[in-house]
Length: 123
Image 1 (cartoon, rainbow, N blue to C red):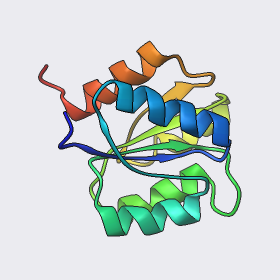
Image 2 (cartoon, one colour; image 1 turned 180 degrees about the horizontal axis):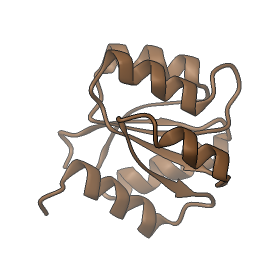
Image 3 (cartoon, rainbow, N blue to C red; image 1 turned 60 degrees about the vertical axis):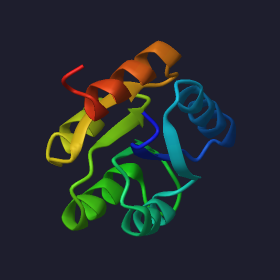
Image 4 (tube, rainbow, N blue to C red; image 1 turned 45 degrees about the vertical axis):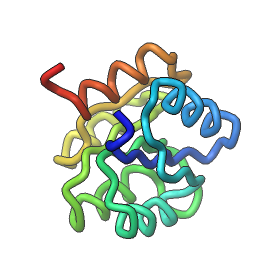
């Protein structure tokens, strides 16, 4: 599983660290972690990940806007993290690269299952 490259984008440092640790404990390769959408766009272009896990509410560029920009440039699946509002769900349906979302707080089981479903759909 180490060959799949993941970027984690979450502005809350403790949540970001928890997500990274959950993924690494499962043997997944987190190649970068950052705290805003602007940096996520830059890292996506440089690192060409297999998956981006991105919070919606962030400073500078929010997760929805960052997802739109990344989707225009790259074909990379995006899994969003949200506190869940109806408006957010409507917006994310319009972006093809967004394959799903998880409601915060994210449990380890839900996170790992969602990531595996995206990265390894036939398993």
